[in-house]
Image (cartoon, rainbow, N blue to C red; front, side):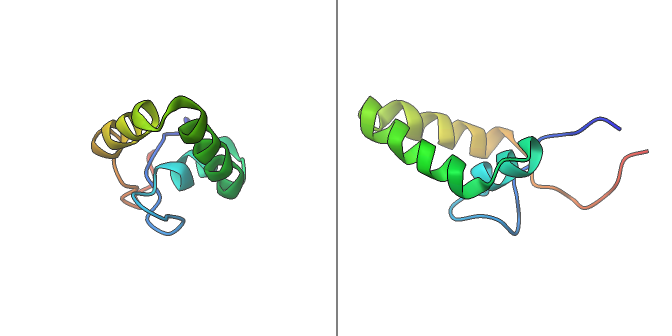
Length: 68
């Protein structure tokens, strides 16, 4: 079965992007959030926030339906 990237409805702080990415990759979303904040600090915030907003519009929420 092919995995799909979805925004998390349950493991979210803002839009569920990092929670969904954590579920997709198997990495703890808290680790991803810490890395994301560090990325924001070291890049001046703009690129990271811009990418996050774009992903919030592109990545759909999980509808709970199992493919197949």
